Length: 78
Image 1: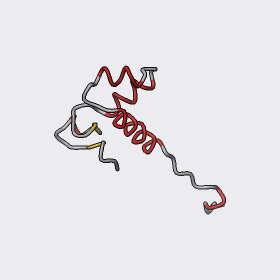
Image 2: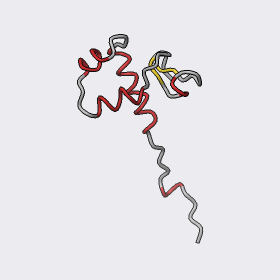
Image 3: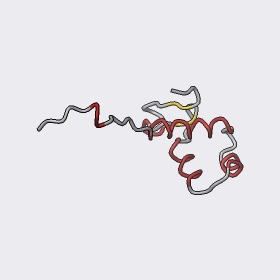
Image 4: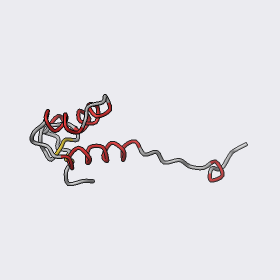
C-alpha cells in the first residue's frame, strides 16, 4: 500500500508498522488522535519522519473507508 508502512509476521505480531521498525501504526494514530502534535510525535520517536506520520494517517484512513451500496442497486426480495 505504501512503502513507509510494512506488515511482517515477525515484527510486532504482524501489526502494521513504520518501515519495518517496531513502531506500530496504531500507536502513532492513537497519539495523534489524543492531541499530540507532530513535533511531540517526532520527539518521542526520533527515528521517524513527518512523512512516516502522514503515511500512518493515510493507512488508517484507507482502513476506515467504507464502501456503501446504494439501495437502488440492491435487489429487494418481497
